[in-house]
Every structure is written in structure tokens, then in C-alpha cells.
Length: 262
Ligand code: MN
Image (cartoon, rainbow, N blue to C red; front, side, top):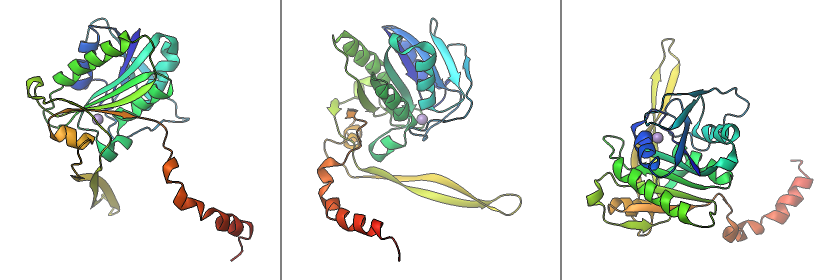
């Protein structure tokens, strides 16, 4: 079985190659990742745009590596197209520099890449370490190897999407592994205005301080406790239990739609 490894920090990111080094000990690995940093692009797919995929020199011996001129999701789609889906057993995305917790899960390129693997019917892991500066990728890479070994040993592999976040601590400082749900963590985006040389306004969207309520059982809570957070996700965005408030609106909406004048 071959593992497809990708990320959103770009093909030469340190976190990717530390992960590959660990995974190559237990399985054949192919790396297909964006040729540059793509953090925050979420599930974006470059529809209709011509994309290049170039072989690059691997930083770990015995591993094939390709750089894609596109998003993390593009990388996974092109990997399946070029390498053949039958050979690929699992998709591992990361290790990302920076946590992907709470609402961030939806804009994360790391999770966006793993989601494509899940859509192709494979087990998929997204791995992140909660630090942008001086992230310690080692514990996440070791954990990834252990998860992959466990999953490969199962007789029947079901597709799943697991979002894994680690606090930025050494292995011996970890306090446990917690099975979690996404918490309510969001950022207040700051918009900074400046001017270009012709006096036209330029906007830059910047990250503010995250707000989080530390509800036990959530991913944000687990990482704050110095625990590994394992969050199983699903691609089904249905709000089925919450249809009731909408139901009362439907008849009048339909009626109004048939007589749209005024
Ligand atoms: Mn990133």
C-alpha cells in the first residue's frame, strides 16, 4: 500500500518532510504537494486552469515527489489521476505549522487536501501543530506513523477524515490523547487599508486574536490541556436535526415565488 502525503505549507516545508521520514519507515510514500505555500485556501479546486505537476528532488531517499502549481486539493486530485487510485491506500496531509481548530477547519488547506482523499473513499489524516513560530513537528510525525500502522493493520479500511492537532510541546510533555469535536474557535479578522502608488485603496485581511470558549470535549480545549486532539469529521454538511424552524416558511415562500410581482 502506498501513502499519498501532501500539505498546504508547500512541498519544501519542514513539517512535510519530517512526516515523510517517519511514514517511509512503514510504507511506500509518494509526495504530491503545492509548489508554494497555500495556507488558508481550504477546499479550493482550480477548475479549468491549466496546472503543471513537476517531479522534484525528494528530501528523503526512496520517495517520489511532485510539486503542483495549484492548491492542496488540486495536488490530491492530480495524484489520484496520475498515480492511479488503486495503488493509494491513504492520504496524509501536514504536518501543518499552526493549529487547525474549530471554525478554522473549514478554511484549512491541510484539511482541504485530506477531504479530497476522503471523497476518493480513503482514510485521510490532517495533522497540525499549534504554533506558527518554532513548531515541533517530531511528535506529530511519530503519531502519524502510529496511526497509519494501526489503520493499515485493520482488515477492512473504511474512508474517514480525522483532523489531528497537537500542542507545540515535546513528546514527554504531552498529557494524553483526547477524542474531540470541533470547538467554537474563531478569529476576528482585521482589515488593514493602505494605498498603492496611484493612490488606490489596497486591503489586507489579517488574523486577529482567536476567541475560544474552552468547552471540555472540544479540539481547542484538548490542545489547551496539552493533549493530542483527534477530531473525526464527516463530509456531510446536513443540518437535518435543525430543519424544523425552516419548515413553517416554505409554503408562503413557494406561494410568493409563484406571484413574484411587487
Ligand atoms: Mn499551512
